[in-house]
Image (cartoon, rainbow, N blue to C red):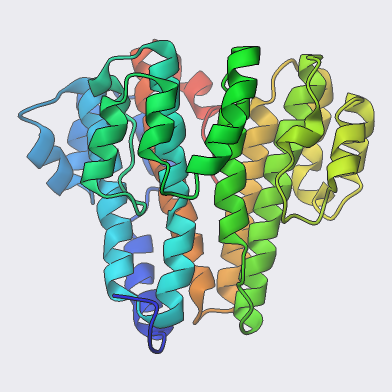
Length: 348
C-alpha cells in the first residue's frame, strides 16, 4: 500500500481489534513466570506464536527460540497492519513503525561497541521498520562504528550519527550516538502531521512520548553525576521541557522530580517518582512510563475508535507483550524467582 488516496480506518481497526483479543493477560503472565524456557516455548506454540515456534524450532531452542519467535511474530504482525492500510493512515502507521529502524541501528551499534557475535546481535533485531533485508545485512556485517554510519549515510540517521561521532570518540561512550538516533527518529515522526482531531490527539500522544524520553534522559544524567551537558541530549517536540529547562533541571535531582510530579503527567508517574527518590534504580520509573504510554494509547483508542489511535494502541500493547515474554524468558534463564520476574513486567 501507499500514502496516496483515502484512508480505510474502519477496516484496519476491525482487524486490529480481532488480534488484540489474543494478547496475553495477567493470568498468562503468571503461568509463564512459573515455567522454564522449554515450557514457555510450548505454551507459546499453543497461542498466536505457534507458526513462528514451529518454523524456528528445528534451528533454535530455549531462550533463543523464544527470542527469534517473538521478533519474527512482531514484525509479521506489523507488516500485516501496513498491508491492510491505505492513504494517510498508512503514512501515520509507517512513520511510527520506523521506531524499529532506530532500535535496530542502536542494537547494531551496541553490538559493534561490545564486539558481540553477529548472530547474537541479529537475534535482537526487529524487522518491523522500513529497512530492507539488504540494509540489515550490511549493518550486521559492519565491523566498526564508522562502518555502520557509512551504511546509513542515505537515511535520516546518517548525518546526525556523523555529527555525534567525534563526541563518541572523545568520550568513549555510546550515549551521543544513541541519542542522535533517537532525535532523528522523533523529529521526523512529529514533522508535518496536521490533520483532523484524532490526528491531533495522536500528535499529543507522540509529544508525551518525547516528554517521557526527555524525562528519562534527564533523570539518568541527574543520577549519574557525570559532567555531561544535558542540553546536548534534548529531543525536540515535547511540551514538558525546553532545552534550557532540561539542562537546568538535570543538575538537581530533587528539583527535577518535583517538576515532573507537578506536571500534567504527575498523576500517572507520581508513585514511580516517589519510589525513585528512595531507590537506587530508574527501573520503576521507566516501567511507569511504559505503563502510562499504554494507558494513554488505550484512552485515545476509546475516544477516537475509528482512527489511527486504536492501531497505535495495539502496536504499543503488542510491543509490550513481546517485552514481557522476553523478560520472563531471560529471567528464568538467569535463575530469578517468579516474584522477581513479575517486578520486571509492565502490565496495565
